Length: 126
Image 1 (spheres, helix red, strand yellow):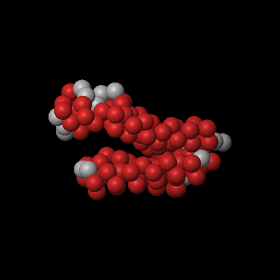
Image 2 (cartoon, rainbow, N blue to C red):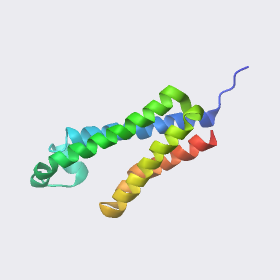
Image 3 (spheres, rainbow, N blue to C red):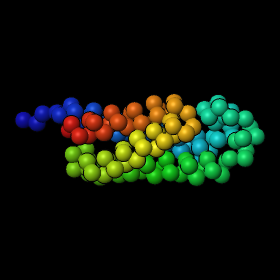
Image 4 (cartoon, helix red, strand yellow):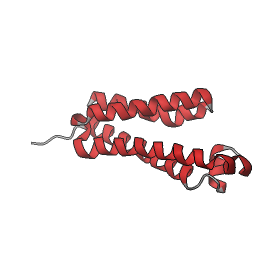
């Protein structure tokens, strides 16, 4: 009889949500940076957005790489067999969120690092 491991399911869902968040950040930074949504999200003026758009697009691309790594680990190997890959990419997200929180806005730590830390704990409990 097959039993469902709810910790594995929860870990998979959290990893997926962290990846989805980083895809959303990619879209914000690469495509919506200069739009009203981008301006609101990052609390900037049109002038600041216009002068930093290339930097933001580059930053968005890196967020996409984080999402790609998480999705690769999750879907190619699963939570248990992909633990090393998921640990690496979740740790990258945590460190980036802590750095962003320390240098830009504390909210970044809450938005990025906390969900990634929860996902990492669940990955290691699975």
